[in-house]
Image (cartoon, rainbow, N blue to C red):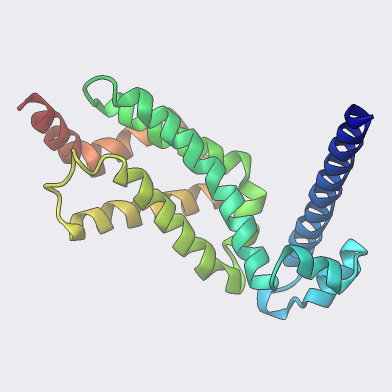
Length: 206
């Protein structure tokens, strides 16, 4: 008898979890559809709930307001970017950094952005752009933070230059196709990060 109750509880929890996922998916899809048509500041919670065919109460069970929803969709997108880049960077860190290995890290990020280009292009326009850009800047900075011990000699101004440059690169590939991504990533790395690579490698040899 106890086993049956446990099984029923597990099934109910699973059904509830699926409902939550479906509801959030419907909210996000409706939100993106609205962002294609008008600016974030002009979108109301009612617009979202009407399109998602849910009640306002249901919306507020999942998000405090449309700003929390925007934060959530930006964060989900950038978590994917971070995980892919961090994995490639982890591999690159196993040996001496080279232009090729660092370019591969950058290329991984660019490909991740291209794969989700439509979502990035929607979130990087209008009044949502400032929020998305700030989050993008922070996620790129956090990626560089994984190298903090190896780049601690680099001053804050230089770090800001690098991170802001990478933020600009991401935005560039949201709106522009790569003619030759391998060559473009290598050229960028050589010009903008070549000295950084040398500093890190010298420090590792001490």
